[in-house]
Image (cartoon, rainbow over all chains, first blue to last red; front, side, top):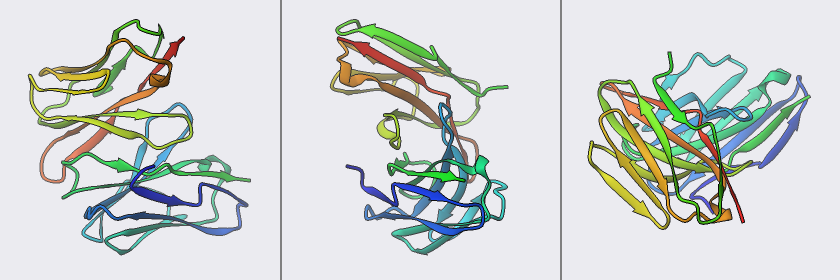
Length: 113
Length: 111
């Protein structure tokens, strides 16, 4: 079991749907991250939140919209996705920004039809 | 140009056959090197952090070492349950820094 919890574990959505991915951590970490991972590839950074403020957006298309309601929660809102957006979406957290190791959840397997 | 390279891409071992995985890097201003284990369909599981050349960390059958240009993950007498993809990630650079992952080494241990 990991200390970063992601829901749902699996999600299938059509290109016109709106859905949200959720992430929760109770380790007191103040930095939270969204990564995208395609099969047999390393994780790719999408967004970084530091102290609940968006600090990094790696030129992610606007159909992905992150939200950090509080220091323990991180959401990723999805709208009008494309089939190529199908991937494993990973949430991670770390202490005091990016110099500390990231702790990952087990991800949401997203399939866009 | 890759800044972090893991080798080999895949490694097949017999149970009990010790070996090493390599993570070499060309970044400057290294601030930390992390090793992760990832099982299929799961998120990466944190194993070790190394911060300076000469540092070593151990956990069960795994030992990680760091030099100025590379890190090794030594696996002693592996078991089938050690089969996974092993990722290294580097944190480097100034102010906010950058984190970059290698492409991983897929390890298979046969009984």
